[in-house]
Image (cartoon, rainbow, N blue to C red; front, side, top):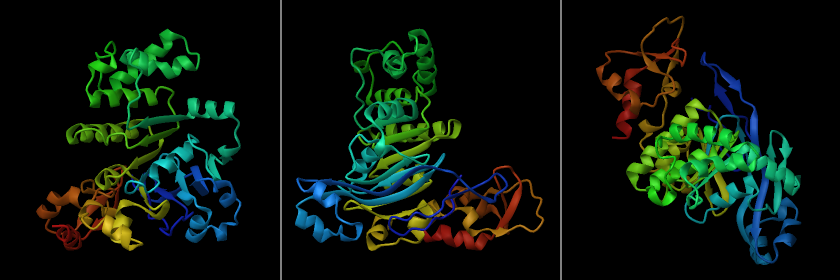
Length: 364
């Protein structure tokens, strides 16, 4: 399911909507909000943070001799959304994720989980938030070398005080879920890189977190293993919906996984939008260059091109949330308009074959 196109202005705070099962838009609750978040490094960081918002300019950064790793980041993430932060190396994407989890402290701004600003939490409350509501996966696996796979996955639950037997039962379930059944007694050194990252994924989900943070989790893996684990994330999100923040520098990965993407350049978010919106309506030259090689057919969805149905009752057709690329065979075989069905199997529109073929040809 994809999100309706939001406002794409820099730092936008636009409403985000999802489509319900009958194909109509519904408002989704905001789960995580960043509001005017800055992270500034340098001896003048505190002084810079006290400046009025209007005076925090590039010239002011230079004058204060500080580096603005994250500059005035504002966005809302709705419950169950996969929100991808991407950009080139040094753009600030990983720093922003660490600000969202308070692994590093923001210089200025607000970070709200279900409306509560976590920047005001004391250390004990923050630790509790991370243990109970957050799961995290990073590029470096950080597994405990002296613990087995089962012991690594069970560890977060043991820290919470769960009896060992119960923790290991839950861990065994997750080990099977991520495709490592029968390897619970192995040590990290006996696993491949892809298997170690599967352990990291399982460990991050042991507490059934509401919020899942993944920072370039697959960038050190070879392409085949990377593709397998991307599929694993998709499968887990379909069966155990969470609010996900995923950091990557790989546009293909972002398009595959994201409901929306925030593109960063030089510490600033320059555009937020669905993959379709970024490709069709890039807001800046930087974004335009970023997405230049992406075929529109890979991101444009049937719902964007269809005409509403007037009393249609077809039971076979193409899905509204499918991309034009995904229905290429149906388009070639069809002789006229294709019925469009929602996730419940009811007809919600018609797709003009010629219009869809033109979109497909644009990426050829």
